[in-house]
Image (cartoon, rainbow, N blue to C red; front, side, top):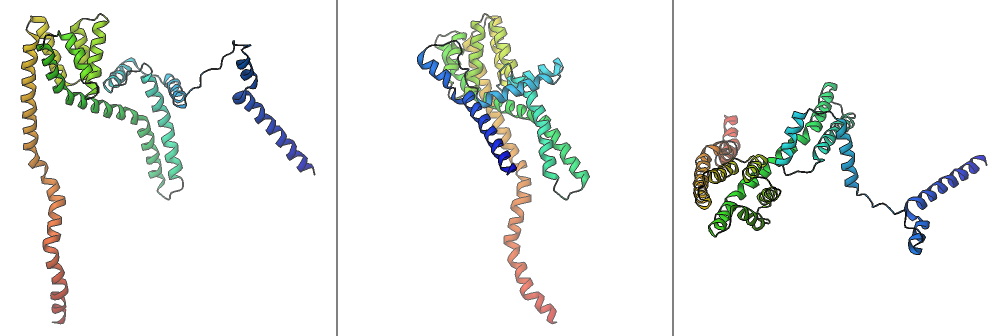
Length: 307
Protein backbone atom coordinates (compact mmCIF):
# COMPACT_ATOMS: atom_id res chain seq x y z
CA UNK A 1 0.00 0.00 0.00
CA UNK A 2 2.82 2.38 0.90
CA UNK A 3 4.53 1.70 -2.43
CA UNK A 4 1.33 2.58 -4.31
CA UNK A 5 0.94 5.87 -2.39
CA UNK A 6 4.62 6.75 -2.95
CA UNK A 7 4.31 6.00 -6.66
CA UNK A 8 1.18 8.15 -6.94
CA UNK A 9 2.84 11.07 -5.14
CA UNK A 10 5.94 10.80 -7.33
CA UNK A 11 3.75 10.72 -10.44
CA UNK A 12 1.84 13.82 -9.30
CA UNK A 13 5.07 15.71 -8.53
CA UNK A 14 6.52 14.86 -11.96
CA UNK A 15 3.31 15.90 -13.72
CA UNK A 16 3.16 19.21 -11.83
CA UNK A 17 6.80 19.97 -12.73
CA UNK A 18 6.25 19.09 -16.39
CA UNK A 19 3.06 21.16 -16.53
CA UNK A 20 4.71 24.19 -14.96
CA UNK A 21 7.67 23.90 -17.30
CA UNK A 22 5.38 23.62 -20.30
CA UNK A 23 3.30 26.59 -19.24
CA UNK A 24 6.42 28.59 -18.58
CA UNK A 25 8.43 27.73 -21.66
CA UNK A 26 5.96 26.87 -24.42
CA UNK A 27 2.34 27.78 -23.72
CA UNK A 28 2.73 31.09 -21.82
CA UNK A 29 -1.00 31.94 -21.62
CA UNK A 30 -0.45 35.20 -19.75
CA UNK A 31 1.82 36.63 -22.44
CA UNK A 32 -0.56 35.41 -25.15
CA UNK A 33 -3.49 37.12 -23.50
CA UNK A 34 -1.50 40.32 -22.98
CA UNK A 35 -0.40 40.26 -26.60
CA UNK A 36 -3.99 39.84 -27.80
CA UNK A 37 -5.33 42.49 -25.45
CA UNK A 38 -2.41 44.83 -26.06
CA UNK A 39 -2.12 45.66 -22.36
CA UNK A 40 1.61 45.01 -21.94
CA UNK A 41 4.29 45.38 -24.55
CA UNK A 42 7.24 45.75 -22.23
CA UNK A 43 8.31 42.13 -22.06
CA UNK A 44 8.86 40.88 -25.57
CA UNK A 45 9.63 37.33 -26.44
CA UNK A 46 13.18 36.75 -27.55
CA UNK A 47 13.76 35.43 -31.06
CA UNK A 48 14.31 31.66 -31.19
CA UNK A 49 17.88 30.59 -31.67
CA UNK A 50 18.61 27.96 -34.34
CA UNK A 51 20.48 24.88 -33.03
CA UNK A 52 23.31 25.42 -35.52
CA UNK A 53 23.83 28.98 -34.24
CA UNK A 54 23.83 27.72 -30.65
CA UNK A 55 26.39 25.09 -31.61
CA UNK A 56 28.59 27.73 -33.26
CA UNK A 57 28.31 29.88 -30.16
CA UNK A 58 29.41 26.93 -28.03
CA UNK A 59 32.38 26.27 -30.33
CA UNK A 60 33.36 29.93 -30.16
CA UNK A 61 33.31 29.91 -26.37
CA UNK A 62 35.43 26.77 -26.33
CA UNK A 63 37.82 28.35 -28.83
CA UNK A 64 38.36 31.28 -26.49
CA UNK A 65 39.69 28.83 -23.90
CA UNK A 66 42.47 27.48 -26.11
CA UNK A 67 45.63 29.66 -25.95
CA UNK A 68 47.14 30.47 -29.34
CA UNK A 69 50.20 32.45 -30.28
CA UNK A 70 49.68 35.49 -32.53
CA UNK A 71 51.89 33.95 -35.22
CA UNK A 72 49.84 30.75 -35.44
CA UNK A 73 46.62 32.75 -35.30
CA UNK A 74 47.72 34.94 -38.23
CA UNK A 75 48.71 31.87 -40.27
CA UNK A 76 45.38 30.17 -39.62
CA UNK A 77 43.52 33.40 -40.38
CA UNK A 78 45.22 33.63 -43.78
CA UNK A 79 44.32 30.00 -44.48
CA UNK A 80 40.70 30.68 -43.60
CA UNK A 81 40.63 33.69 -45.91
CA UNK A 82 42.13 31.64 -48.75
CA UNK A 83 39.45 29.01 -48.13
CA UNK A 84 36.76 31.68 -48.54
CA UNK A 85 35.82 31.84 -44.84
CA UNK A 86 35.91 35.49 -43.80
CA UNK A 87 33.78 35.44 -40.66
CA UNK A 88 35.39 37.22 -37.72
CA UNK A 89 34.47 34.33 -35.41
CA UNK A 90 35.79 31.65 -37.78
CA UNK A 91 39.16 31.33 -36.05
CA UNK A 92 37.61 30.78 -32.61
CA UNK A 93 35.10 28.33 -34.08
CA UNK A 94 37.98 26.43 -35.68
CA UNK A 95 39.82 26.20 -32.35
CA UNK A 96 36.62 25.11 -30.63
CA UNK A 97 35.98 22.37 -33.20
CA UNK A 98 39.55 21.14 -32.74
CA UNK A 99 38.97 20.89 -28.99
CA UNK A 100 35.62 19.12 -29.38
CA UNK A 101 36.87 16.65 -31.98
CA UNK A 102 40.10 16.10 -30.05
CA UNK A 103 38.00 14.91 -27.08
CA UNK A 104 35.09 13.27 -28.89
CA UNK A 105 37.08 11.13 -31.36
CA UNK A 106 39.19 9.36 -28.67
CA UNK A 107 36.03 8.69 -26.63
CA UNK A 108 34.29 7.14 -29.62
CA UNK A 109 37.37 5.11 -30.49
CA UNK A 110 37.64 3.92 -26.87
CA UNK A 111 34.02 2.82 -26.95
CA UNK A 112 34.60 1.07 -30.29
CA UNK A 113 37.73 -0.87 -29.26
CA UNK A 114 36.65 -1.65 -25.68
CA UNK A 115 34.71 -4.75 -26.74
CA UNK A 116 37.30 -6.00 -29.26
CA UNK A 117 39.86 -8.70 -28.62
CA UNK A 118 42.81 -6.76 -30.06
CA UNK A 119 46.11 -6.28 -28.31
CA UNK A 120 46.04 -3.52 -25.63
CA UNK A 121 48.92 -1.69 -27.28
CA UNK A 122 46.98 -1.59 -30.55
CA UNK A 123 43.97 -0.20 -28.69
CA UNK A 124 46.09 2.55 -27.18
CA UNK A 125 47.55 3.39 -30.59
CA UNK A 126 44.06 3.54 -32.09
CA UNK A 127 42.89 5.94 -29.37
CA UNK A 128 45.96 8.15 -29.84
CA UNK A 129 45.47 8.14 -33.61
CA UNK A 130 41.83 9.18 -33.11
CA UNK A 131 42.94 12.03 -30.83
CA UNK A 132 45.49 13.27 -33.38
CA UNK A 133 42.95 12.95 -36.20
CA UNK A 134 40.31 14.84 -34.26
CA UNK A 135 42.66 17.66 -33.28
CA UNK A 136 44.43 18.16 -36.62
CA UNK A 137 41.50 17.16 -38.86
CA UNK A 138 40.01 20.70 -39.07
CA UNK A 139 43.39 22.06 -40.20
CA UNK A 140 43.53 19.55 -43.05
CA UNK A 141 39.94 20.38 -43.97
CA UNK A 142 40.85 24.07 -44.24
CA UNK A 143 43.87 23.20 -46.40
CA UNK A 144 41.79 21.04 -48.74
CA UNK A 145 39.12 23.72 -49.03
CA UNK A 146 41.69 26.44 -49.74
CA UNK A 147 43.34 24.34 -52.46
CA UNK A 148 39.96 23.63 -54.02
CA UNK A 149 39.10 27.32 -54.03
CA UNK A 150 42.48 28.25 -55.51
CA UNK A 151 41.86 25.70 -58.25
CA UNK A 152 38.48 27.26 -59.01
CA UNK A 153 40.02 30.74 -59.09
CA UNK A 154 42.76 29.52 -61.43
CA UNK A 155 40.16 27.90 -63.67
CA UNK A 156 38.04 31.03 -63.96
CA UNK A 157 40.93 33.47 -64.43
CA UNK A 158 41.29 33.11 -68.27
CA UNK A 159 37.61 33.89 -68.81
CA UNK A 160 37.82 36.82 -66.41
CA UNK A 161 40.92 38.14 -68.16
CA UNK A 162 39.35 37.90 -71.63
CA UNK A 163 36.22 39.67 -70.38
CA UNK A 164 38.38 42.36 -68.75
CA UNK A 165 40.20 42.90 -72.05
CA UNK A 166 36.86 43.34 -73.84
CA UNK A 167 35.64 45.79 -71.20
CA UNK A 168 38.82 47.89 -71.25
CA UNK A 169 39.02 47.97 -75.04
CA UNK A 170 35.39 49.06 -75.22
CA UNK A 171 36.23 52.22 -73.24
CA UNK A 172 35.72 51.33 -69.57
CA UNK A 173 38.29 52.16 -66.94
CA UNK A 174 40.06 49.48 -64.97
CA UNK A 175 37.87 49.93 -61.87
CA UNK A 176 34.66 49.73 -63.89
CA UNK A 177 36.03 46.74 -65.81
CA UNK A 178 36.74 44.89 -62.55
CA UNK A 179 33.21 45.66 -61.34
CA UNK A 180 31.68 44.52 -64.63
CA UNK A 181 33.68 41.27 -64.60
CA UNK A 182 32.54 40.53 -61.04
CA UNK A 183 28.91 41.00 -62.10
CA UNK A 184 29.14 38.94 -65.30
CA UNK A 185 30.97 35.97 -63.72
CA UNK A 186 28.80 35.78 -60.61
CA UNK A 187 27.19 32.48 -61.65
CA UNK A 188 29.86 30.99 -63.92
CA UNK A 189 32.84 31.53 -61.60
CA UNK A 190 31.59 32.74 -58.18
CA UNK A 191 35.01 32.52 -56.51
CA UNK A 192 36.84 34.96 -58.76
CA UNK A 193 33.71 37.11 -58.96
CA UNK A 194 33.77 37.41 -55.18
CA UNK A 195 37.44 38.38 -55.19
CA UNK A 196 36.91 41.09 -57.80
CA UNK A 197 33.89 42.37 -55.86
CA UNK A 198 36.10 42.70 -52.77
CA UNK A 199 38.62 44.67 -54.81
CA UNK A 200 35.83 47.01 -55.90
CA UNK A 201 34.67 47.44 -52.29
CA UNK A 202 38.19 48.29 -51.18
CA UNK A 203 38.46 50.87 -53.94
CA UNK A 204 35.16 52.41 -52.86
CA UNK A 205 36.40 52.46 -49.26
CA UNK A 206 39.26 54.71 -50.31
CA UNK A 207 42.19 52.36 -50.71
CA UNK A 208 44.68 52.89 -53.47
CA UNK A 209 44.37 50.68 -56.50
CA UNK A 210 47.84 49.25 -55.99
CA UNK A 211 47.07 48.27 -52.42
CA UNK A 212 43.72 46.72 -53.37
CA UNK A 213 45.35 44.65 -56.13
CA UNK A 214 48.10 43.47 -53.79
CA UNK A 215 45.46 42.45 -51.25
CA UNK A 216 43.80 40.46 -54.02
CA UNK A 217 47.01 38.56 -54.72
CA UNK A 218 47.61 38.00 -51.00
CA UNK A 219 44.08 36.70 -50.35
CA UNK A 220 44.04 34.15 -53.13
CA UNK A 221 47.74 33.15 -53.25
CA UNK A 222 47.33 32.01 -56.88
CA UNK A 223 50.45 32.40 -59.02
CA UNK A 224 48.58 33.30 -62.22
CA UNK A 225 46.58 35.96 -60.41
CA UNK A 226 49.77 37.33 -58.83
CA UNK A 227 51.25 37.73 -62.32
CA UNK A 228 48.12 39.56 -63.47
CA UNK A 229 48.30 41.87 -60.46
CA UNK A 230 51.97 42.58 -61.18
CA UNK A 231 51.13 43.46 -64.80
CA UNK A 232 48.33 45.82 -63.73
CA UNK A 233 50.50 47.53 -61.10
CA UNK A 234 53.36 48.05 -63.55
CA UNK A 235 51.00 49.36 -66.22
CA UNK A 236 49.49 51.79 -63.72
CA UNK A 237 52.91 52.91 -62.45
CA UNK A 238 54.65 53.45 -65.80
CA UNK A 239 51.63 54.76 -67.69
CA UNK A 240 51.38 51.88 -70.15
CA UNK A 241 48.06 51.23 -71.82
CA UNK A 242 45.93 48.89 -69.70
CA UNK A 243 44.26 47.31 -72.71
CA UNK A 244 47.56 46.54 -74.41
CA UNK A 245 49.03 45.08 -71.21
CA UNK A 246 45.96 42.92 -70.60
CA UNK A 247 45.96 41.73 -74.21
CA UNK A 248 49.62 40.73 -73.99
CA UNK A 249 49.10 38.98 -70.66
CA UNK A 250 46.05 37.14 -72.06
CA UNK A 251 48.14 35.86 -74.98
CA UNK A 252 50.87 34.82 -72.54
CA UNK A 253 48.38 32.90 -70.37
CA UNK A 254 46.90 31.22 -73.42
CA UNK A 255 50.35 30.05 -74.55
CA UNK A 256 51.14 28.92 -71.00
CA UNK A 257 47.89 26.93 -70.81
CA UNK A 258 48.71 25.24 -74.14
CA UNK A 259 52.20 24.35 -72.92
CA UNK A 260 50.78 22.97 -69.68
CA UNK A 261 48.36 20.80 -71.63
CA UNK A 262 51.18 19.53 -73.86
CA UNK A 263 53.28 18.77 -70.78
CA UNK A 264 50.48 16.76 -69.20
CA UNK A 265 49.96 14.87 -72.47
CA UNK A 266 53.68 14.04 -72.60
CA UNK A 267 53.59 12.70 -69.03
CA UNK A 268 50.57 10.52 -69.76
CA UNK A 269 52.59 7.66 -71.23
CA UNK A 270 54.83 7.41 -68.17
CA UNK A 271 51.86 7.60 -65.78
CA UNK A 272 50.08 4.78 -67.62
CA UNK A 273 52.95 2.32 -67.03
CA UNK A 274 51.88 1.38 -63.52
CA UNK A 275 48.13 0.88 -64.24
CA UNK A 276 48.99 -1.18 -67.30
CA UNK A 277 51.53 -3.28 -65.38
CA UNK A 278 49.38 -3.94 -62.31
CA UNK A 279 45.85 -4.07 -63.77
CA UNK A 280 45.79 -4.64 -67.54
CA UNK A 281 48.66 -7.12 -67.99
CA UNK A 282 47.39 -9.57 -65.31
CA UNK A 283 44.00 -9.56 -67.01
CA UNK A 284 45.59 -10.27 -70.39
CA UNK A 285 47.61 -13.12 -68.87
CA UNK A 286 44.44 -14.63 -67.38
CA UNK A 287 42.57 -14.36 -70.68
CA UNK A 288 45.38 -15.67 -72.91
CA UNK A 289 47.24 -18.13 -70.69
CA UNK A 290 44.31 -19.24 -68.53
CA UNK A 291 42.70 -21.67 -71.02
CA UNK A 292 46.09 -23.27 -71.75
CA UNK A 293 46.75 -23.80 -68.03
CA UNK A 294 43.29 -25.33 -67.55
CA UNK A 295 43.85 -27.66 -70.51
CA UNK A 296 47.24 -28.73 -69.12
CA UNK A 297 45.71 -29.46 -65.72
CA UNK A 298 42.85 -31.46 -67.20
CA UNK A 299 44.76 -33.49 -69.84
CA UNK A 300 48.52 -33.48 -69.28
CA UNK A 301 48.59 -34.11 -65.53
CA UNK A 302 46.34 -37.25 -65.73
CA UNK A 303 48.58 -38.60 -68.52
CA UNK A 304 51.70 -38.02 -66.41
CA UNK A 305 50.11 -39.70 -63.40
CA UNK A 306 49.11 -42.74 -65.48
CA UNK A 307 52.68 -43.13 -66.72
